[in-house]
Image 1 (cartoon, rainbow, N blue to C red):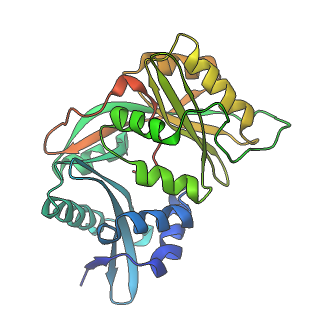
Image 2: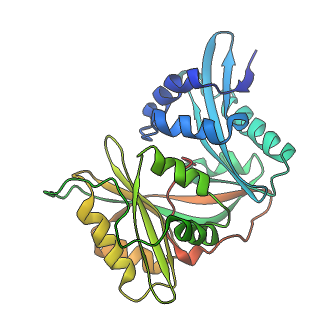
Length: 283
């Protein structure tokens, strides 16, 4: 009989192996971070002694929670395990009185989530820039000219629509990522960079009232610092300025997906200010 229980730290190696099947790049540190932040909201499906799949949730206060990492072992797909995991996660978040439940998914998975009560919201593009040689080494730090981290996190809260400062601070504290940031007379911008084994990912990238050249300057600064890996990011289609900027710097569309909400679309955050989404919770 299929059962679902809370995920534990000893489940992390299994979860990493499942992620590798999908080439998602989820690391041991990523999963441990999610368990630290929402220990009661990460779940493992199993039957007897066999682990079959998992999902995680990340709660950003009462206003918003994200579902991510819905993965089922390929040998056991078609048995409604994924459906049971998502329903279990939604029930947990509903019982926790979370106002809005959201997730990101690619187009091929939209029907699956719609059948579970999720509705499509904004579309996003997953984009990639091929490897470009670079001589300098990566600096795991915030640049000296950046405004305070507190100011950057306030800007992130306004753009994202909820406070994810605990998640961002954990990423930085564990040296799992770094950022560049700048502040002007009326605007503020920051961009996080994370390097995995096979790719470098840009995001979250937030630009609040940027000057005309600020987004391009920030992108060039980040590109000059990353290692010799393909670079990927995800941008909302509605942010045409961001899409044009990425295309001008050699990024090309890989896949398309949707931000989805459970039951009803939610008007939160500032989509125009989100130049790159940044799946910190691996949603």
